[in-house]
Length: 107
Length: 170
Image (cartoon, rainbow over all chains, first blue to last red; front, side, top):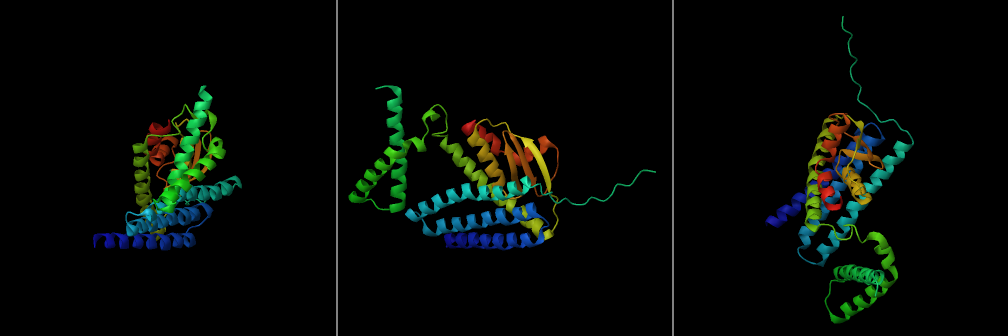
C-alpha cells in the first residue's frame, strides 16, 4: 500500500520535472539558460523514474541492474551537458544578462 | 618473487573479482555451471586487461578502494541536493524570473579524479553548469546568482561537496 503510493509519487515527480523542464527550454532566452532547464531537469526526472523502478522490482537482480544503469547515468549525463556548455563557451557566445535599470546621477 | 610480480597477481585478482561481480549481477543465477563459466571467462578477460583496468603506479594512492561509507554519504547528499535545486529551477521556470551570471572560483582539491567529480556534481545539481575546468580554476554558469564575488560564490556552489571529496580522495 505505502509502496504503491511511493511508486506513484516518484512517477508523478518524474512527469512534472520532464514537462516543466522542457517548458523552460521554450521560455528561457539563450543557450546556457536553455541548457540548464533541459539537461538538468531531465536528469532529475529520469532519476525519479529509476527510483520508482527500483521500488517496484523489490530486492531482486533487476534492482541491481537498474542501480548499475543509474551509476552510469550519473557519470554520463553531466558530461554530455558539460560538452555542450563548453563548446558554447569556447565559441565565445556571450551569456544573456538581466538588464538592470540605469542608475540615476546624484544631483 | 619480487614486489612487481606480487602487484601483478593482485591486479589480476582484483579485476577478476570485479568482473565476477558483474557476471553474477547480470546473469542472476547461482547454478554451478553458470559460476564456473563466469570464473573461467572473467579470469581470461582479466589476464588480458588488468593493465588497463588498474595502472602500474596506482598502488600508493587511495584511488583503488576509497572510504566506502563516505562515498555512500556523498551519493545521498548529491541526490538530495539534486532534488532541492531542481525544485528551485522549476520555480524560476514558472515565474520566468532569472538572473544568470558567470562566476569564477578556485578549488582546493589536488587529485584529478576529485576535481572531475567536483565539476561533474556541480553540473549534476540543476541551476549550475560547469563551463570550463583548468587546473584548479572553475568557470560556472549560475542561473539564479546571489553574488559574483569569487569566494562567496564558490562557498555557496561547492557547498559540502568539496569537504567530503577532500576526505575521500584528497
